[in-house]
Length: 68
Image 1 (tube, rainbow, N blue to C red):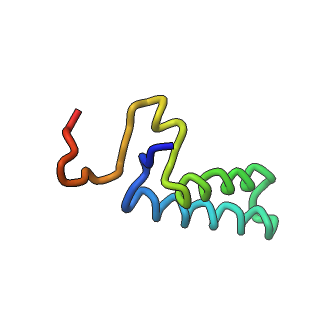
Image 2: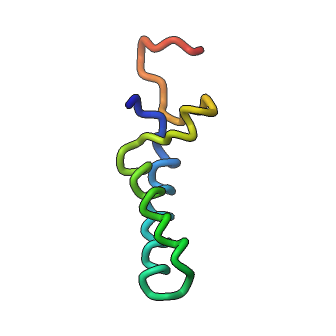
Image 3: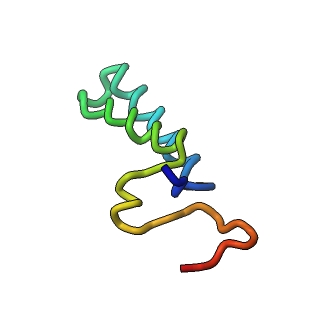
């Protein structure tokens, strides 16, 4: 798995995942809120399968990388 989630995107995913799970745990929203675990995991592991399918990458380029 090549990292394709970086920077602000990663932080937003972690925060959103935690918020969704907390809201589901407290009964504020339905059980769909537990999908926040997936959002959280994509932030923690810096990998999003949907980004791979769509060709997105929010990771910064490293020196020596070529733009595609």
